[in-house]
Image (cartoon, rainbow, N blue to C red; front, side, top):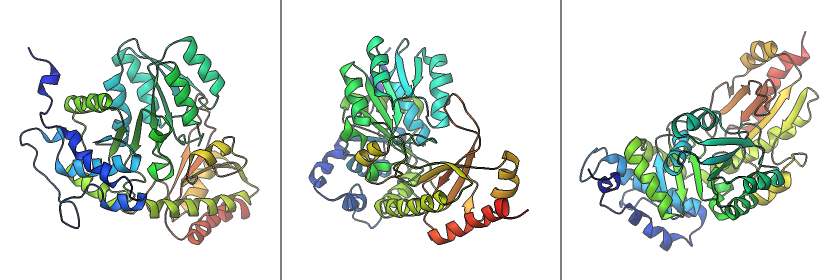
Length: 389
């Protein structure tokens, strides 16, 4: 019987990235608009055919176009796009790890990544997983030097505690001890941070969030400068089939064209919301990387172009009043999951002592509406909660 590699597509998909070298001198905004769509049409056509010389999960023109664009924005040689953001985190681990490997993860990860590394990787792959605070570089170096690790997993801006880890420092330590580094860059997008430039081996994005930007398409991306890693990801795509659909490829490439404009507005609005919340005596634990009081503010200032569109805080009220009085009063702040879309979203979190999340920790994903209206909407909720009997 042959090996799985024998069934890999014979077409070299790395050729879709060759033109990126010619366009690398173009500005970020220009690459958002121009890279990937070489169809001669104003929008890349949607290629809905499932088969040809290979199955669509190995690649199609719609997915090739958005892959090429994202690779250019990430300063990556290769990008593979997946069906969702969480698959862009799980697929690299499944493709690169073996039974008996050890990985080190920052203790605050997106909840479904967290479940995967804590519950599923040990069960299905025999991987040892150690969670720790990767903002403590001394403790990290001790941990990785005392016992080898295969992979280190972190987020550029951690979800939801907004820790900012020194990616360059972590990569230097990890590489010195033979470990690869996987960074989830979703909260920043390549507009604010490019982890591969800081030494990361793999950068994953939830394209569902800022990259698409419209709340209408699921997707993920895996970017790397290693052909070996890219090949392993392509093989795992053949096994798992978690490929991005042609229609979602079309929607995400459309969204990428306005990425920088939207990120600037998200950041503008977030900074104004922080200033407003800081003036309220009943707001506690206000957290935003752009605040000088943030414990990793200096790292954020060095590592990020701006500080992002997510703000967190607590209110000096009970759990019941938060849900029964404050949240129902809001109109413009939607009590929805996700982030990075035009709507502004509010998401209180349950207490999780292991991850360091306090009870009723509120995450605001600041959207694109007029910030005066967003502040007025919060003010109505605060008035109902704190200013009236």
